[in-house]
Structures are given as structure tokens and as C-alpha cells.
Length: 232
Ligand SMILES: [Zn+2]
Image (cartoon, rainbow, N blue to C red; front, side, top):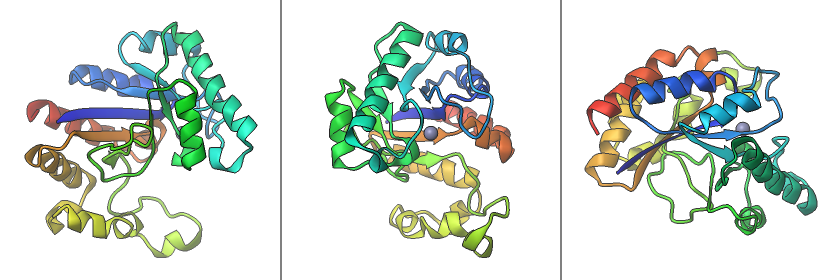
């Protein structure tokens, strides 16, 4: 069972993630978009190049569009242009792509494959294997669970248990005990144990450093990386 991690967008806080990964002898793939997201501070090209000596850098489009909602020509530019950009910044081949917002359809998947990548990651969660290397799912996102931690507009205000509700059936199929649904850490440890016991191909943790900061989850990330390090 392989323990994989990936981190999206290229925020400067990714360097803090990388330091934690190094401390627990874990590798990460950082999917970086040159266009700033959420007006956040992003890594400089120099920082990305330095990071590429310790971890993998993947492409994540040029402007972070929903690739399924733009023309084939623009999608091609976004996909190929981002590969070229990463290769120029790092001086290394860029083999992995990550679909912004996880938005992908069969045409976009094929376009990524034809652009010379060897694989691509989605945001589909609670999975432990990737039958299609161009539709690689993840296992768990580091994100508030089971409750939303901030009130948001719209119906979500009325549904604080939304993150759990959306995943309940799948978690049941994974035989998740209710005790493991009470916190992000309990769920992460349960799913990691499940992936080991059932001999799955991988456990893939993914996240956004900006959200880890926003939701105050640095301690949880470190605790989980330490747990995996001790139990691998
Ligand atoms: Zn993104």
C-alpha cells in the first residue's frame, strides 16, 4: 500500500506543507497553477524550482478554468501550456496533471492523455485505487469533517453535517464505524487502517494549504503524517 499526498494550486503555504512532509519522510505532488487563486500569495518560480528538488511538481492548467466548460482549443492551450510552464520552471519533465475543480469528461481526459502526461488526478474521494491512470481519485481531503466549520451562504447554513451526509453511504460501504465519523482525524486513521488491512493499492491524502490555514488544521495534518510514519 502506497501512501500518496498531493497539494493543489501552488500557495506559498505549500512550503509549510513540504516541510511537514519532509519531517515525516513523505513525498508530495504539488499541482501548481501560475494564476493566483483566491487572491492568495502564491509560490514564486524560484520557490517552485527549489521545491522540485524535494517533491514532484504537476500541472494544473494556466488559469484554473472548468475545462469542461470552455472550447476544445482553449482547453488544449490550458493543458499543454501548463505542462510547458512547469517544465520551464523546474527544468524537468512534467508527467502529471490535475483537473481544476476536478472537472473532467471523456474529451478532457483524452486531451490530457494526448498532451503527453502519464496520469491525471481528480477530486473524487474515498477511493483507494485508480483503474484509469488519467482519472486518479483520492482517498481523503484534509477539510473540516463531519461539520462545516464556517457558516456559508445558501442551503449549506441549514446543513452543517453536509460533508458527512454527502459521503455517508460510501463510508458505510467501507464499514466505517460511527466512532470514526466523529472527527476528521478519527476518519483519516480509520481509512488509513482500512487501506492497509484490505491491502489497497494506495491511500491518497490531498488538500489545499490555504484551507489548512483557514480552518486551523495544521496540527491535524502533522498528527496524521506522524501516525502514518509510525504505522507504515
Ligand atoms: Zn485548484
